[in-house]
Each structure stands twice: as C-alpha cells, then as structure tokens.
Image (cartoon, rainbow, N blue to C red):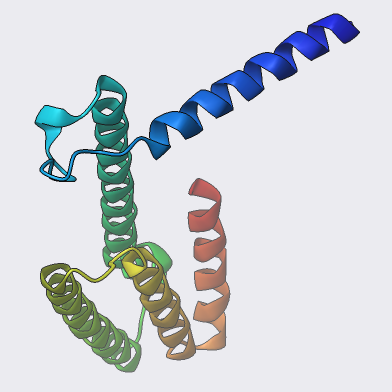
Length: 162
C-alpha cells in the first residue's frame, strides 16, 4: 500500500513539474499571444474548453432568465385561479401588472446596454425573480382577506410544481 502511495505521489509530482516547465518556456518575441498557429495542441484544447465553458454558462444564464420571465408573465393568472375579483381588485391588479411590465422592459433595456458595454448580465434572472416576488406581494395586498387566502393556496401550489 505504501509503495502504491509513493508511486502515485511521484507520478503527480512529475506531472506538476512537467506542467510548470511547459508554462515557463519562453515564447519567441515575434509570436502573438493569441495566435492559434503557434499554439500547442494542449493550448488549443484548453482555449476551446474555456470558450465552451463560457458559452455553456451564457446559455445557462439565458435559460434561467427565460424561465424567470415566463414565470413572471404567468404568475398573475396562476395566482388568481378560482378567484372572482371585484372591480376595484381588477383595477388594482391590472395596475400592478402594468407597473411590473414597465419595470421588466426597463430591465431588458438595461441588460442590452450592459451587453453592449461588455458588463456582466448574469444577475438578470435574480432581478426578474425580485420583480416577480414584488408583484406577488402587491397583488396579494390589493385583495380582500378571503381572496388572499385563496391566492396563498394557489402560490403554494405553484411553488410545489416548480
């Protein structure tokens, strides 16, 4: 067992030493840092893996953002399922929905501006979730206590599905 441990440790040290030596090799002054023509296969593979990982992360962010937007758009209808609203409640709910739509539009414009400027847009899904939670609270506050109870049941049901 001790012999195997020693062999594994020696192999790991050899690998680390080789990698460090490769990393410390001097490149000719004429070679551009990003030229693929002068890169080793390992460097090209590492660059491709890095690009693929970044692409996957962007796609995951886009999927999370789309899911958050879809949930935000569907939320009022799902919350108010089997609830008969009065005229005042309908007016208040429509006002909340309109305000939320305006905030979502502003958030989307900000996201596009951030993308153009090269700033991070990774937290957009969190901002949309915050909008959703705010909309949920405002809609609930606009309802009668009886309707609030039913909305609470609907929200619990919605959360169980997700």
